[in-house]
Image 1 (tube, one colour):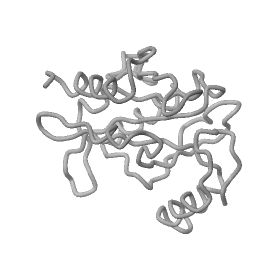
Image 2 (cartoon, helix red, strand yellow):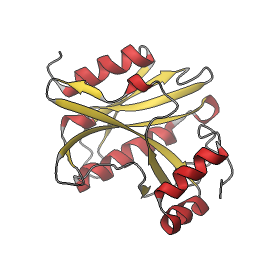
Image 3 (tube, one colour):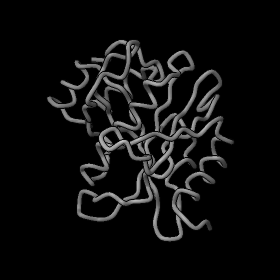
Image 4 (cartoon, helix red, strand yellow):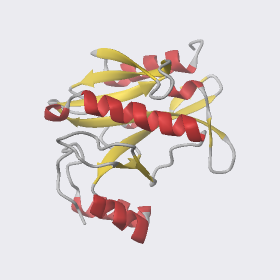
Length: 193
């Protein structure tokens, strides 16, 4: 096994998704310091004509889970190629920054609000966390010498969907997604509510 969680995450992602087309680093939004993680770009993942972005290094420092347990996590975004651009990288870095500030895990079924809209083509500010269902089951968990790394899929949701989750709960929204089967890689899709 590798020396650090980041090295193991990078090796595992390459074994499942292929060699990243690029690795992107950023600076922390408030301090300007080099971020403690990067974003790997995988082309034609999970299908041809799409891309997947995954953080690498966020799992170096565990978060506090719902019961106080230590949980290591990485974040994922996937979309059709026409949505590829800087806004989604910024979305990942913003979400990772929110998690690092709170010190708590990103829990599937939770809706998070970003400090700014995701971009001109995707004007929404909310993300629903979900297991990475469009990717192979082998994607996660990522096994380490001591524990595992969870991968959370960040799905942009409309204001109507955000209200639905708050009103009806994440299980009801999960059921709605299963019934309606929207194209979650179409970031300009209409609301399912």
